[in-house]
Amino acid sequence: MSQQPTDIFEAAASGNLDYIKSLGRIHLEAKNDRGWTPLMFAARYGHSTVVEYLLAEAKVDPMVTNKDNKTAADLAEFWGSAEALAVFDRLAPKSRTVARAVTGSGSPFSSASSGMAAAAGIVTDGSKSSTMADWWKRRTVHENKPLHFTGGIHNRLSFLRTDKEYLHASVQAPTTKFLLLADHGVLFKSSTKDLAFVSHQDIQHLIGSDPLNNLPEGLVLVFLGADETGTEETLVHGRRGVGYWALDMSAKGPGVKQELKDAVESFTNSLTEKHGHYMAEARPAAFGLSFPENPVVIVCVISPDGDRVLLGRQAVWPQGMYSCLAGFVEPGESLEEAARREVKEESGIRLGHVMYHSSQPWPFPNSLMIGCHAEALNEDPNVTLEDKELEDARWFSRSQILEALKGSRGVNWGKPSEGNQLRLPPATAIAHHILKAWATEEGEIPQSKM
Image (cartoon, rainbow, N blue to C red; front, side):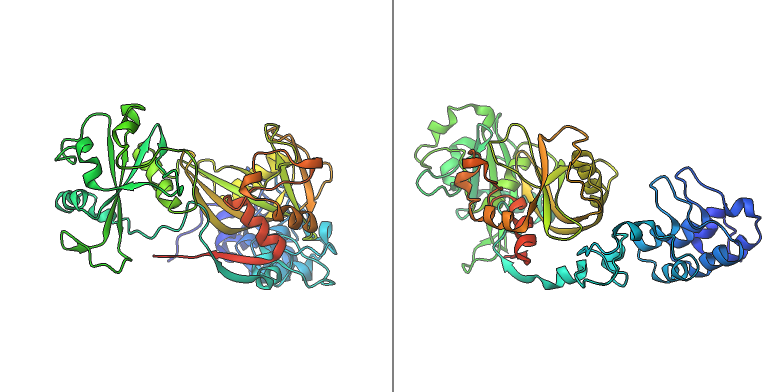
C-alpha cells in the first residue's frame, strides 16, 4: 500500500489524482509560501491527468500567478511538460502569460516542440524557424586549442599523494621537473617566456636530502602529477611518467632569486600560453588554497531576437572596454540560478534558458570561470544598473562584436580605445570565446591532450 501524501501540494507533485479528488475546493485552490497552487505543482511535474481534472472538473482558476508572476501553464512550458501544456492549450489557451508577451519576437531560443527551448518558458508564432536548438545545430563545431590556463597533459595521480615510496622516488628522479614560485609569482624564462622548470639537482641545496619529512622552513613542496604521454620509457618506482612538482619559495623573500641564478635566467610575472595549466594548478596548491575557492559564472546574454548581446563595463576599465556580465556563484546556487541573479542585479535583464559553453581556471588567485550563453526575456534599452557594480551596460550588434573581435589582441587589453570604439577581452579570456561562438556561430570544443 502506497504512503499517503502529507498535503495537497505533495499529492499534485506526485500525480496522486485519487487523493486530490477526495479534497474540497478550498484545498484545491490553496497556495504555499511561494504562491504555488496544486495546479502549478501538477503542471511543473507533467501530470496531465491531474491538470485536466483541476481545469475541467474542479474548475480552478488557470490565471492565478505565483510570486514570480508565473501561471501554471508558464511553469509547464518552462519545465518542458509537453503533455500538461497540451491540456492548457485545449482547456485554458490564454493562460500562458509569457507566451503572449513575446509571441512573434522570433526569439532564437523559443520553440514549443523543443525540449531545450521549453526550459526558456517562451514560444513564438512559428513565423520564424530560428530556435535555440536551431542555433545550436547551426554552429560549425570544431576542436580548438585549449583555453588559456587549460590543456593539462599530466596525470594528477591523486591516489599516489600518500604513497611515500613513490613520492620519494619521484622528487629525486633526474627526469622530474619542478615549477618554481617566488614573491607569489611563477618563474618564467626571460628569453622565451616559457615556464622555467628546473631539475632536482638545481634545487637540492634548497630542499635538502629528505624534503618529504624535513623540508626547510619557508618552503612549500607540492606534487602535481606525472606526464605519461612522452615516448621515452621513464620509470619512477616502477611507474612510467615524468614527475612534476611545484616549489614555492615566497616565504624566503626576494633573496632566493639570487640563489637560483645558475639554474634559471630570471624571474618575471609575465604570462605565457605555454604550460599555463601548470600555473593554474600550482598557485592554489602552493599557497594552500582550495580550488575553486570562488567559482564565477560569466554570461553571454543574447537578445530575444538573437541579433544582439548585452555587455557591461566597470568604471575602472579603460575607455571603450566592455565584457560579458559575470559574478560569483553563491552557496547553494546552481549555475543557472547564479547567472539569472547576477544578470538581473547588474542590468535588470531577466534570463530564460542558460546553456553551458566551457570553463577556464583563472589563477588570480584561484577562480574557475564558467562560461554560458543565455537568452534574455526582456530587452529594455534603458538597462537598469540595480546593484551599481557596473558603470554601464548596453546592447551591441553582431557586426559590432565581429569588428571588435578583430582588434581584441592581448597587446590592446588594458589600453583605452581610440574614438571610444568597442574593445573586447583578448583570446586569453573565456569572455572572448563565448562572444566569438555567438557572433560566428562556431562552437569551439577545447582539445584534450590526456
